[in-house]
Amino acid sequence: MPESMTESVAQEQQERKVKTRTAVEGIAGFTIAVTAMAVFAVFVATGVYAQDKYSLRSPGGIAFSDFRGYEDWASVSSARSNEVLKVIVANPAMIKAYEAGVPSDGQSFRDGSMIVELQWKPKGSTEAPFVVEVADIFTQAFVMEKDGKRFPKSDGWGYAVFN
Image (cartoon, rainbow, N blue to C red; front, side, top):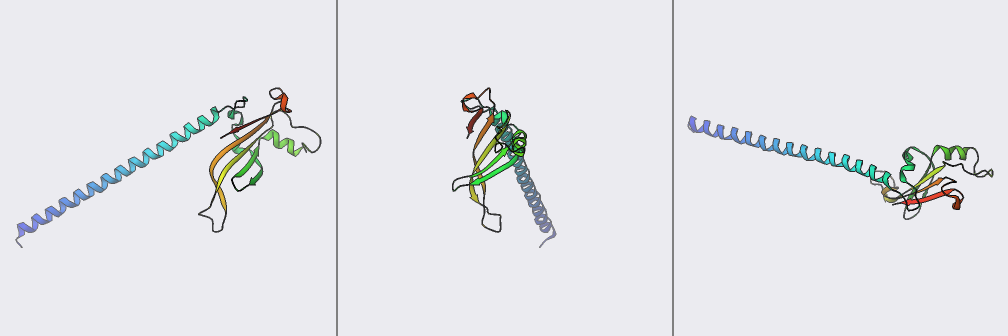
């Protein structure tokens, strides 16, 4: 094969490599841009969800924002039925009352005591090495707060369900 033809073939192959790298780099750049947009969308959605959940108010006047910080409250109970997994958490005022023996000692809970019952639909774990169901889709939060002035007709307890 003549030398000029070999140079021509080599140059053509080099141009293809450059074009191939450019296309791969373009795809990589596109992938990074799409990933960045997806991460941004998750952050925005999370922020909107957090805002929306705390703007909820029940017809009886109980605001979900009254229970802000419930994610850090102590767990006092859990339960499972065929339909839902439940976890009950209590605020520090409620925990203090439990520790003092309320209600078994005849005393009542003080105003400011609060509990939240969180419910999820269960699903089978795909990661555990044994059969176990874990929380999947959040379904509702049932809340209770003690305020004798606001809820005199129900022994001072206000109730609400947020789906």
